[in-house]
Image 1 (tube, helix red, strand yellow):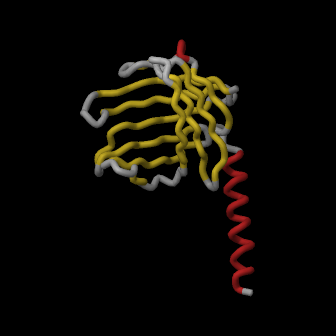
Image 2 (tube, one colour):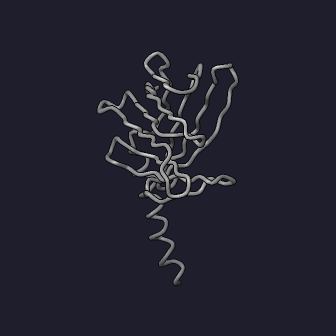
Length: 153
């Protein structure tokens, strides 16, 4: 009997979190506009597609990239915008995601307590453009920055 008292609220919490994530302006498929993007460090990819979908109380990202040499890769990430630090397995790095407002999120990658790279994602008011900015220092202490512009499919 006690289990039933907890199952219904738990199920409602999961459904409510999923519905909130579905309303997120990041949800959808985004194609990199290479011509409008600026890379101040590193090589621009030939193509990149980001697909954000609801996942629990956050989002799942599938990132499909064809690098500057034509090699395709794909990798998933999970985003929970709770501001908590999460370790990156087998590395000395961690990251924290937070929501700044309805259309803006931020990820800070850290080494120990030191912030290294900050990434901001801004969805335009009309929901058609995603602009991602990266700035900071990589693991070798070299300045990195980029402004990536994506169009919603």
